[in-house]
Length: 332
Ligand code: TRP
Image (cartoon, rainbow, N blue to C red; front, top):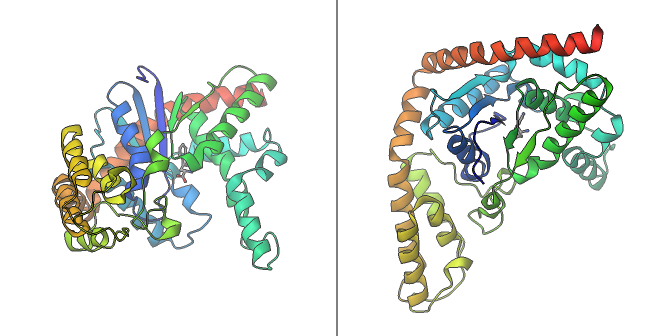
């Protein structure tokens, strides 16, 4: 599907440095779409507040996420990159949308239900550790999506329901007041669920099996060498599509390189140690330049602040107009 002349938007919650699964799931498609569409990308620091209560940590993660997006190729000429909390209109829209969102919709949120299940399993009170920021998380996310008139929202599969909620909330508004909101579509990259972690399960921070993309070389190497394999001998032929090593390689290499590597698996004669070394060399060379940019920005956070201030100015221009229309529709 080639999107053109749409409004594309995605948010990155700064709760740690984005890993490779996040990158493939949401950020890479957004960077691609930004070439032909108006694109907003923001650091969702208000969303991080429900779990992180240390300001310095949020700020550091915000810098890391911003530096990461730039290092991975975000073009600031066609992408508005900003910090969520810099836009006062977002808090306003959040309050307004609260009044249109049924409580029952929030009760159905997978992320909230998962927390309740965990509490129950641990013998705790069902609402232990759940604050209202977490409970109403999808309303703030709907505000993010609707404020900027998004058509397409690239996200990982775990965020699909949240985008559907935004669509529902837009529908309630349009029905109750007037047609001010477009109905956003989630864009789930097929591969996003298929990025394997180091242990072969889905790559996820909660499994502690991620590849942190811009980690120093030595750390990257250690992680790649830790990939779990089966016990086939070097001589045996192997099915590349069953190997985490190959499945990761595919995301970094050209089609021709991948075909050649697949053939080496099938032919037999290549041990997993060698295959890991080939994967490491590939990943390491592809990431050398992004790593340099990332490290430069992290050593010069004033540059990051400037970039974010610039983005906030552009985002707020859109936000200000929209919130006026919304307030007029709701409050007269
Ligand atoms: N909830 C998303 C996540 O955890 C981040 C996010 C916040 C977002 N607001 C958004 C994503 C709006 C897309 C659109 O990854």
